[in-house]
Image (cartoon, rainbow, N blue to C red; front, side):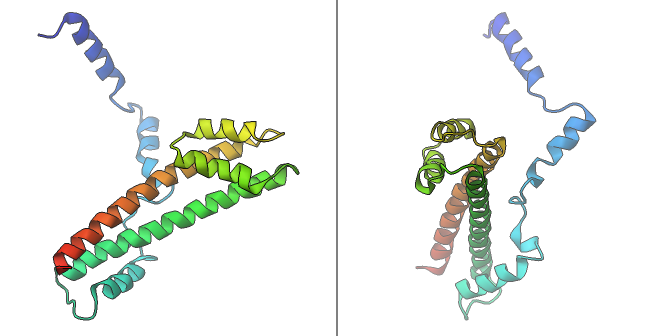
Length: 180
């Protein structure tokens, strides 16, 4: 049986975890997935839809009709183009960080600062930890915008890992379907 103290603590925690209650809070939360557009299904996007179809037909091969093989190939193509899109965004963020740091002063050394950012991301450090390391490696304080970009880069890195995992499992499913 649960103690009264634990029951009270559980109820208090439940009251804190109900999500936004005001209209403004609910509106803000509803826009969370729209920040970067990576949650959009590529096959439904008019810009990417034809590319998904073209790549799917190339993956499925000439003898694949409108059956399960082509459907699986569409999923693989969508995952591959998702990865391309994510990596393009990642390259743009790295370019923005590079530009900001170059604009600052003459103590820029490409392998050290940008390498620190990438090494920090690979090590699983969070935005604040990476920013502290970057700040410590420079003679002058990087602009706050660098910290914001590092945070965006960390989120993009998570999307990239998920996309690679998704593509890998979809390719395995396609291979199993084709008997390869």
